[in-house]
Amino acid sequence: MMRQILIGMTVSAFCAGAAVAQVAPEAVAFTEGAVEQSLSGAAGNPEEGKKVFATAGLGNCVACHAAEITKDIPFPGTVGPTLDGAADRWSEAQLRGLVANAKMTFDGTIMPSFYKTSGYIRPGDAYTGKAGTEPLPPVLSAQQVEDVVAYLMTFKE
Amino acid sequence: FAFAGHAEPANDTLIIDGSEIITRAAPAAHLDGALTELISGWQFRDTETRAIQMDDFDNPGMIFVDRGIDSWNTADGTDGKSCASCHEGPESMKGLRAVTPRVDAKSGKVMNIESYINDCRTTRMGAEAWGDKAEAMTDMLALISLQSRGELVNVAVDGAAAPIYAQGKEIYYTRYGQLELSCANCHEDNNGNYIRSDHLSQGQTNGFPVYRLKDAKLTSAQGRFVGCVRDTRAETFKIGSDEFNALELYVASRGNGLAVEGVSVRN
Ligand code: HEC
Ligand code: HEC
Ligand code: HEC
Image (cartoon, rainbow over all chains, first blue to last red):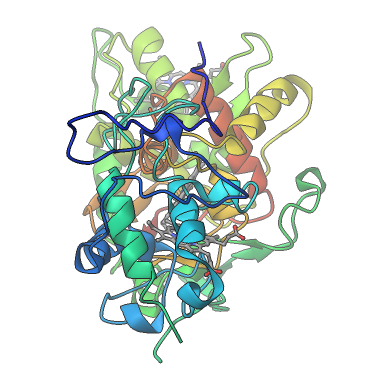
């Protein structure tokens, strides 16, 4: 049975008493691919974002993207475009949308969705090759998305 | 700044023992323009890796061929027979690698070389089936493949194979796993591009079994499929499953026109 994805519905959990309001993956509101609200309710840390960008078990963005600013991360891939000037081309909200679910911006893109939990064909349990059960944990946590977005905001020419 | 960019595969000529092995070919009509040229994975590897495959004395895969010969001649099972008891020398297997997997018209089953081997072991020798990744199995695959070295892959896609081909094709284009990636996303749309430090090839199977330098052992085609599907954060199919048998037939047919390499070397 497919779980229904509640795209477009803002179920932002402003729980009274909670320190920060986190947006659940099923509740992210995309407006023409962009996501206005911080997913973790907190600001991103670009230093941490660089780790997310470079680490195979996290965002592994470097598998597909190179940029002048990331040149100390060896062997960048070429499947995606170079990201020089990404922050000049895209707003923070657009970059957040791109990382959360790039298919909302580029229909059918090969770029994976990093903050999505269901609607997959033969979902696995991370990289074990074994079956996973939806909803899966998203590839990146809300804070990791914010961190990598903060890092992308430094990609200026 | 130093940035590799999309890189064309090499345009080298694979010559082993004085004979050229075809590594570039025109695509078969059934591919319907999906690829403009067929290119063996050998062309996508670096100069040193390509060189290792050009010399059988350097090719570590050939050691496993020798082990395969030993096991070919060794009796096993309750009937006290070896492969040689019924098939004489391994050269009797010449040509088989180029036309498998194929669909057995009578049983409707997809037969790859592994299935034939285990069929003989269990029904004709009274021996136990070899595991899909057992060294004895990949040794024998290497020995049998080598008999067809240089022959052009010519896997049937019509007749009894038609529904299996269709099933394999469907799997090839399905975007599996949490990363939602299909075989085609990487090997059709992006061959020539780098995914991190890996130069993406067309994912052809004409070179299998391959000796992988990083694993220091042989891998079968379906063994490789397991790794590729796992890397999409998907639940893999099992080696020998109907799905992977169909996929192996389909992927092999995408290489119709490339040559069987025998035992190839990859990083
Ligand atoms: C499997 C490949 C792949 C991975 C992994 C990947 N991307 Fe992408 N990305 C692409 C492709 C391809 C595009 C171009 C969109 C299109 O046309 O499909 C793209 C587009 C983008 C863009 C917009 C491009 C522009 O105009 O500047 C940004 C920003 C981006 N990616 C960031 C990221 C980040 C950050 C990560 C990791 C969290 C990531 N990507 C991971 C393939 C990938
Ligand atoms: C007792 C006899 C016997 C033994 C022992 C035997 N085989 Fe066979 N094998 C056959 C026969 C008969 C066929 C043909 C089956 C058919 O056509 O359906 C066959 C078919 C095959 C085929 C398919 C060849 C083709 O052209 O269709 C392969 C591969 C094979 N055997 C490998 C082996 C290996 C490897 C061993 C030892 C591990 C072995 N066989 C042991 C009798 C034997
Ligand atoms: C995320 C990208 C990706 C996906 C998706 C993927 N592969 Fe691969 N595949 C690779 C990489 C990287 C290699 C190693 C470099 C190369 O040969 O392309 C590889 C290698 C191969 C090879 C070995 C080629 C040779 O000559 O040694 C085969 C065969 C193959 N893949 C088939 C498949 C099939 C079938 C699928 C779908 C079930 C698939 N791949 C999905 C990335 C991928």
